[in-house]
Image (cartoon, rainbow over all chains, first blue to last red; front, side, top):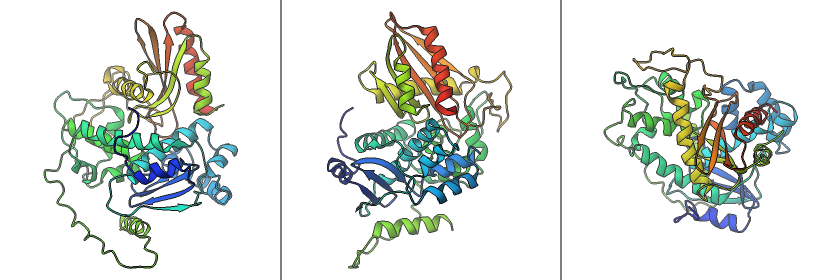
Amino acid sequence: MSAVATPVSPMLVRLAAEKATGALLRDHGTLYLVDGRIVHAESPAAPGVDVLLTTGGRLPREGWDEAVDRAGAHRAVGRFLVDSGRLHDGELEICHLGAVFDAAFFALSPTSGPTRFRYGVGHWFGTVRPVSAEAVERETARRRELLDAVWPYAAVDTAPVVPRPAAPGQTVGARRRALLAAADGKRTPAELARLLGRPAFHTLLDVRRLAAAGLVATPLDPAPDPAPPPPLPVLPVADPDIALLRRLRDALEAHL
Amino acid sequence: MPGIDECLLEAMALPGARGASLVDWTSGLALGTAGDSPVGCHETTAAETAELARSAAEFDTFGARGESAGNDGLAGAADDDGPGGGPHVEDLIVTTRAGYHVLRFVETSFDSSVFLHLWLDRDTGNLALARIRLRDLAERLVLG
């Protein structure tokens, strides 16, 4: 398991090689690089560090907001959370790394949209524990394979999670039981992740495991493509930051 | 203390330590590694130990004291999990002809699923000491 055979993003490989600093904008998320290493990632599909920390009550929402207010301008929110005694180093690293790999998985998902790199752009969260672009690439590829190895029906990833009755004597672990309990037949895996304050990939994986065990329904049709958005016309615009516009659109639609 | 790296370095200072890592048992991701992997690849070791840890964390047999909760008739044990939904299992020990493996669950107060894995040489390692120190390290990693 050395180099990835087909890179998930050839552009990311190139940027890592040239030790670039800036933001890599793609359809489903953004990766932030410093000297070619990934220091942060975000995606509309993945709950951010704030959701992960506040949902379970680890951090009050006001504590988070204050950290962003006071340290956001210096791009050192993560550091501030530790220095002000709100979090311990280990907690910050565990939570942030989890969020970075989670968002990167979605940011690097296959897309037909354009990929852009903005040199010099940083993220207000600041650097916690940089990871190599290669490690993120490899992990993203591994995660895709893992999902399909568990239950090769991607339709369950986006459909509402509908629990099915258990067979007599069938058991399920505490984490997945909590997931089933929150599944009201309407919420999608992404919504459940946000509700439970868990990484989105972990939720997808648990949903696939539950579907494989027959405890979650697998939609028969590959969810009749929700009217696939007509291929965006490529307009001759001066500065077509289409990736950004599409992410904005996705974010807005997510709040509909 | 300490972040992940300091924690793993301390684990590696134990007698007979050959490799250490912090692994997420839902996804199989290694959040940090130190020393060697028994198979020459920390990522493979992380994915494999994660499966073992996940089984232990989720099997009813190792869950709470036999109480079961209903959810569409689903039997289940550990309903009084910690705030992070951490398992009741504290650690796992696997003994091989050449070594010891200690997997210690890390309890966080936000939702997570991580454990420390320490690989020890059978001849020079001290399993009892390693188990105690790993418990201590797992606490200090998140409690400071």
